[in-house]
Image: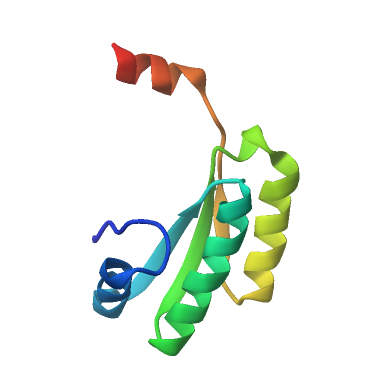
Length: 94
């Protein structure tokens, strides 16, 4: 398992090249809607298989639904969503 930063920078390219499967974690934001498309394009160029999971989907359900629909258009299966939970932040603070 390789963790990479968001976007399509050099570390992301190196991670994608080394991976059998790419799991992109997107948040329902403007950049979260556009970054998966760039990574999907990168994976196609590098012959990698990509999937997406939408994190904090409950923060903006409309954009989460857009990401889900766009993922299908990019041939990137959406594996599911993770809702936002304040208790995670509270646990981190503690």
